[in-house]
Amino acid sequence: MADPHELEDDTGVRVRLPGRVERVVSLVPSLTESVAATAPGLLAGATDWCTHPQSLDVPRVRGTKNPDVERVIGLRPDLVLANEEENRVPDLEALRAAGIPVWVTVIRTVDEALTSLRRMLTEACGLPAPSWLEAAGRAWSDHPAPGPGTRRAVIPIWRRPWMVVGRDTFAGDVLARLGVANVYAGHPERYPRIPIEEILAAAPDLVVLPDEPYAFGPADGPECFPGLETALVSGRDLTWYGPSLVDAPSRLREALAGPS
Image 1 (cartoon, rainbow, N blue to C red):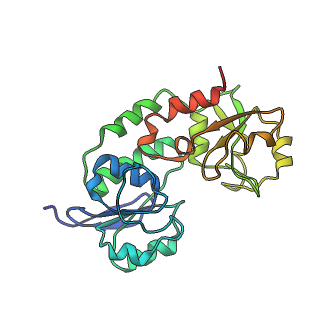
Image 2: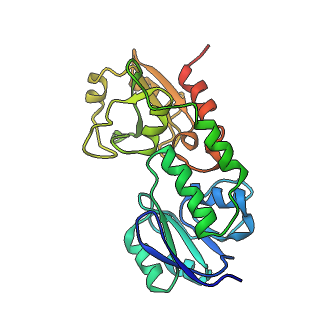
């Protein structure tokens, strides 16, 4: 067995890792799916929101924003996986104070996802690089950042109140790689509240409506944007970074293209 060692996670925090990681609790659905698709036997716990793979059968520790810290500690993980956007610092600090190593990812672009997931799986968890990650890299290699003439889109993620995708987000980068420019990419906030009147006044070419976190659907969302093209897309394809990256480009291109 390898000796314990230290590595820096994506935030620059040094994490003391055991010689062999055998029990992992994941506090992020995308990271849960990534581990499950690579070495399912490692997962000792996950959040209530970790819905993929659908067959996942592990203890649940509540949500990403309100994990049951005591339950996580009781599961005796060798490592807890987290994300700087999804999880709260006080929860992660409580786990560290209990002596549990916590690996925090930072993922705001497709390229960051591919790099971060590789480090998390191979360096933090000590696993071989999975074939699905290689496939994901190939799937996105033909999708550069957008140039002039791309469609301008608004991407609502909630209503009552309306909230949209703003600056420096994974979803915004995914769409940019597919030739769709985010109208609010320059907003000071990452997920600003924008009144519907202002969204309409921005005159986007397209309104992209994912089915999570708010469950937009054919009868809930498009009717608010009369005269504008709308595209209903999978929230998992748009916002999850993990095995879904393999097929997300083709599924999103089809959804963004609209009816044939």
